[in-house]
Length: 260
Image 1 (spheres, rainbow, N blue to C red):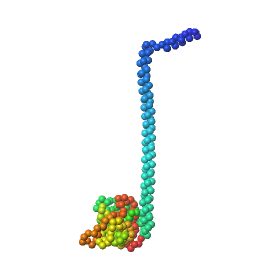
Image 2 (cartoon, rainbow, N blue to C red):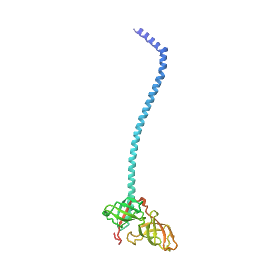
Image 3 (spheres, rainbow, N blue to C red):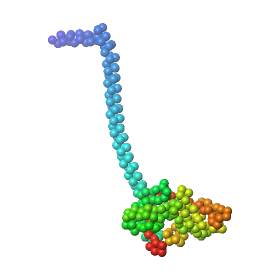
Image 4 (cartoon, one colour):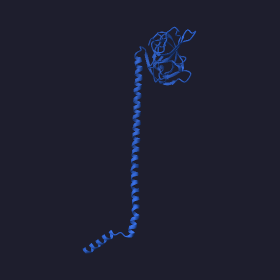
């Protein structure tokens, strides 16, 4: 049995080493097909792995974008809080410089496109505000209150043509009336032509009419001219306050007698 088995194995080994014509044709045909199949399967496998990687990468990207948006929102809130703190601190510094009571208010509407140049603030009679009180920003005078309700007030801006404020030139002490001129700013009226007025002169409230305390900043002279035959100069004044950027203001509780 052992001899017979060895003979059979030897014959089989010889037969396996000799490939017949039919087997050659089968191998010749099957080899490239199998190669194509293997390459296709490998490519499909690689594509699937890349797809899974991209899906995971897209999910990770969405997660990071969401986290970035949340962090940016927090940063913006912190930045706004910081800037608001700076603005309020400036107003409180002004408030501490006066002996009068003062109310800090937020601008809730800035209507400068209509005939009347006004803004609306979120404080009213409940906080002690009334018609005629002066309103300031950290840069200088904004205007005066012309209308109030319990929790809101309307302020006439100093650039409105109906606004008239007693003023003086800081350098020469010449006194006049600062009238609003709309988009052009303001005009300082009733200054004698003999007065020496120069561009760059600072204009302050004179306090004579009792509406505004004395010494508040109104603006700066941008030009002065003497008209022939006229008694007064034509003086252009640029307001100290940028009305397009007002967010918070300070209303002074001040009466004509100068008492708080």
